[in-house]
Length: 404
Image (cartoon, rainbow, N blue to C red; front, side, top):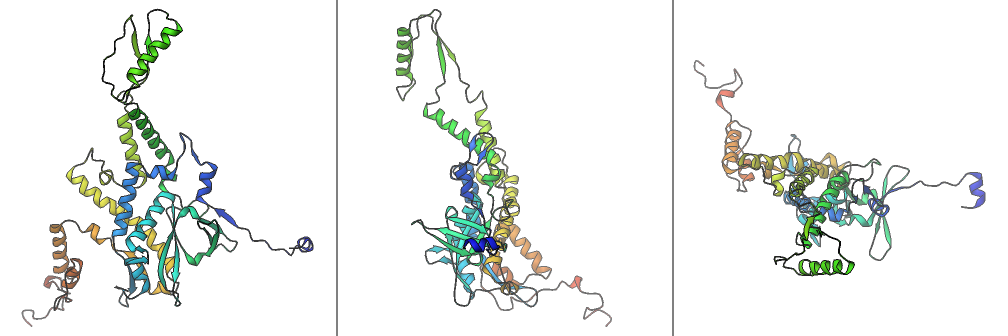
């Protein structure tokens, strides 16, 4: 714009706000206790890795289908729609649906955001999803409240995409209402403590758990003798990998330990508590990630179901609604919707499952074909019929009553 245009007030500037999760790392987002928490290191904790694997792999393994709404209020699987193949079979030519969905959930749990570039055909139908690394994506909010995505590549250049071209999943909305916040960011004090304890355990292991202390002489000794004694002690204790040898300390020398043992500091118990806190951060029951200190047969089965109800189901709904909004048009959402099939995780054992089938069949809300379909069995002749319990018929509508 020219100077004259600026003076006359005819210049129009577009205000763009940027929210980039990598900016916090660059500026040093810190916890108040032990410093910056690197998401890569935090997700490398054994319990955190187990939580991320349990959530991502279970959700990726569950079928994700595209359904078409039926006139009777039911649903039919829209297997012929291109989007169904993308979510159920092949994300893109280089990635299966399992790999693509797992990648997005892992990004969601570690960085709070997951992105995928949407590829459509000439009819506007989604034919592929290409996941993007969160560190390469910058999100900008325009004045019209829509979002713009700037994606960097390995050559240092960037490409701008509009909101309709990017699938953006968010774990929990930040205060700006644009970016997501991961469990690691929300509970960074917990992860900082767990990382500090892990580093401390590594340092102790690297020293073969040798304690620190002091040699106490009953009388004053010269500098040369002091250095000679220390050199001999270091050579014998620290200079060898095997520390089970015998030391002879003469001249009334006494050893005073200056460090606290792991047992005295309750170090192991504190690490167990930190592992529990990390599991709580991901809403994953302890026994699911191998913390079995207080496990029994009954609570293991109950916690397996709690994983589905309290962790996987909310995450699945979060992903479904984001995909419905990004992958379907407003008109398309009136006819189709995306949904996970979590029934397999809640089916229980064989006896409980068959008992549920029997109740549904005898009371008339399940047909033989529906039950056989859940068990991956083919349909049978007459299998679409429903039973009607005689003692539940509407009064006055029974046929063949005595006295008629």
